[in-house]
Length: 433
Ligand code: FAD
Image (cartoon, rainbow, N blue to C red; front, side, top):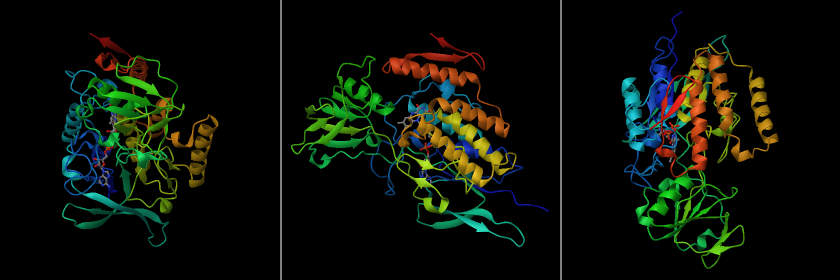
């Protein structure tokens, strides 16, 4: 009997969505060409720098959190999709424009653009169980989208890849008395460049990747930065102009800032580098058997699928990963599930596995809001996906260079980007000049 090829909807044309489209298009015998919905007018997602903050011309929130002078925190040698290297002439750590160019090149080289509907927002994704006579019910997905002229459409797909990113909805922790603060309040999502802060006193909350990088930018532009965080005191050298402090616990009635250690200070600006919330306004979590909190989406089998709906895939939801290689593994695994070259365990087994994994992490002392942090576990995870679905695993050099760079970053946060690397083989890299 002739069967229609499965139709996949991809939400978002950032790195994850482009990767999904690329692999779907390369399996023309197994899948219909994808429909990629993209709410902006460009590919690239996060990497598509927008100097505006707030909303765009259509009144939609600006998606990208990119700032003007950002350079990548991973070298291009490990950041790349394993089958699509960056231009070898480029240095290892790139300005964001080069990553945007790279993603445009990826899109062009795989002829993805004709399959993208730009300026089209996915508003609703709903599972619908279809039962044909004598057959078991099959889940299809009704995807409702709206284009820039407001024209709404509902279409049916066999699977949906959620590639909408998770660095757009600013997470602002509850700071008692914040309404008393008399200066400027800002989240790193709306930070673009350092010059406007020259000569000002800025308290930066959070010392992870963005908090640290932005503090260094601000200090170099002549701001007096207080880097406030709950981590053990950072022991590596910070540039002049940055002092560390404990966490901000409250803002007092007179507008001064109270820190955990009891000290009190004043500031012109409070900058929240406190991360982002998971936000999927187009999904009904309860209907999918999911719990979506600010920092956790659960249960997800293999950090991708709600066990009860294993044709819905979240690509790239984990944190502290090597993003593009991770997406590349997840997408190939998801497609192997869809084309049935991977057989999933029963619903009960998948639920049990997810619970067991979460439980194990919590027993290791991982806090609930860190459960989607993968960090060291990412390599075994990618390896398992590759082994199960039968695609080539990540070359070991990705891990070894990634770990080297993390080490460098920890010790020389200001200077690690000056180094350049070269891959010699699947297992070896070298430092050049
Ligand atoms: P995104 O890039 O966010 O793309 C999601 C896309 O979905 C967007 O185009 C958006 O418009 C679209 N979309 C969202 N909702 C809808 C909807 N409802 N309907 C239609 N379209 C929708 N990674 C690295 O590897 N190296 C780095 O150096 C690095 N630095 C970073 C610096 C910053 C400041 C940030 C925020 C992230 C950084 N990352 C870095 C991580 C980066 O997010 C990932 O590399 C990757 O680009 C994420 O891709 P994505 O496709 O998952 O999400």
